[in-house]
Length: 586
Image 1: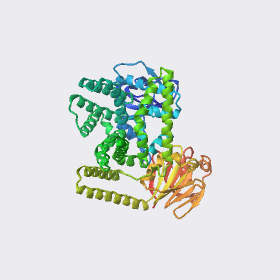
Image 2: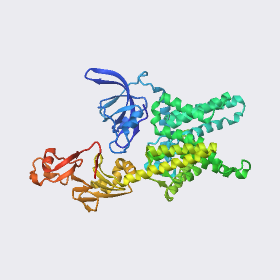
Image 3: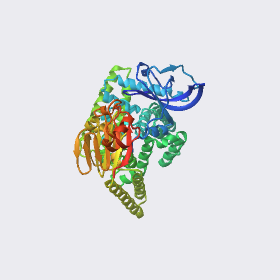
Image 4: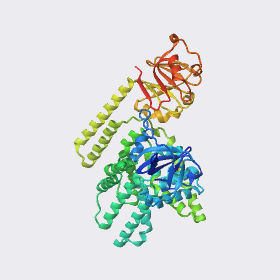
């Protein structure tokens, strides 16, 4: 159902099931699954629309295994995918195509075009990092983007350049209209130009994978062009709402897609806040000397309005904010059309080596400039505010504050100022209540961390992380499992304690493999101390059995439960946890 996405250990691709076989034979069915294939020479040749016969066992995707962890199962469910399966290279084979089996074969041409363009960019003289940026700019293809590049763009506040959105659709429409500008401004020329622009826009939307943001921009642009051709242009808010209703009627799951939410909130923020912000500074409309200040102020207002529109969602989902986003948006975004045009020139001139080399050299120069700028912004003080607390009630209060403020800027009514102050006061009071609650917390969390183990004691705004040697050396190993929990629990400082060490203060004590976490006593059995609990080891005398509230058997350690029960007195046994254990420590 999509272009295969390779990674280090597997090739991931969503698929639509046509039939399955059990002991009674084959049964036709319909549903979507996520398939993970073992990388091999066969997976390199897979294309969108290929039919496979898999021998695999379906399983549920991973849900929220730790508190506030990303729920991959819910994410897939919103995309209509309920099951997943893993197969090795010997458990699947390709089947002949069947014209009536897949309802999406009409997208084979755009998907094949997307893959050819990606391969053409990979054959250029661009560095791997520059290839990843060019692929994301032109096609929304993010598989080749390295984490450092994504972090640079995120800290600079221009991540939207790497996600194909309305900005890219507008640039494509502008470039298509620019080519037909010599036709003049007569009615038939405007009609022809509008039809060509719509065709170019929808071809671009299909090639880029029909992301929610590009679908929104394509539908809105089509409404705009059709109204212009008919001589009846509608309002921007009507176009925005109509496009949202149409997309949700076709794909209701888009309502839960973060790209859909960010795209519409950004456009809504621009519509609601850009004009009032522009009126804050009056710049003359006439005179060549005022052209540059007017453009810079317009870009500042546009970027600020879009950032404010997406602020509640950004804080709620990512808990961070790029402080210097205006610097990057004013310096980089105005040249996005030139950058995207250069990438198009590189892929269109692939058959002419001289032209392609010249376009590639220009693109390398542009990308080096963007890289230098984003790196410089990342070195500025407080480039990114991290670990910002924002739950659902706080996000709703912030969104209501922005909505009332926008209404007040448009209508100039005095009561809106009082309403904004009241909402800000409510948000401040709620944040204070959350902080006071965090000051009184005493909780022990034993993480479900795969091959590693870790237990964390949350005591007020401080935490103590007791973990194996790998996690103690680099806590980022389990950042995926614990970072969101630390933000929601308002933790400011973490003390990392490797098992086997000695530590003691008024709230936590660690001695070897035993830890006192508040009123909870934790004991760990790992490979270094599991030998006495083997099958043939002598059992200690019942009177000498140590008592603990939680007995944690480390992953990769064999320990028989019967012998553990004879060797320890414990209330809870944790062995290869598939779900985090959360207990009160006071």
